[in-house]
Length: 93
Image 1 (cartoon, one colour):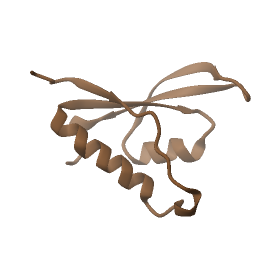
Image 2 (tube, rainbow, N blue to C red):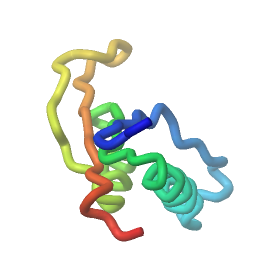
Image 3 (cartoon, rainbow, N blue to C red):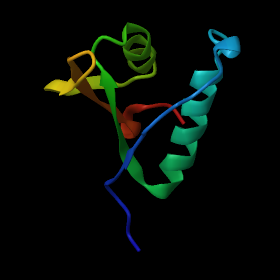
């Protein structure tokens, strides 16, 4: 079956606080994208709280770009959601 143009959605990258800053998140994301490319995945999508500066920075450093914003998507506290996209066609293998 031809899977050209398939897309993937990343729901969560989790790591223990003890490993914060050691590159574990980058390693997990790299492994995910390396396994996605042979499956003909061209884009990876995710959603993150707009105020989660650390996560937003991590994703931007990893090549994700803000695609759109869902206004007031989250509650407690009320906050926008950023929809971010990574183009795997333009990333290194």
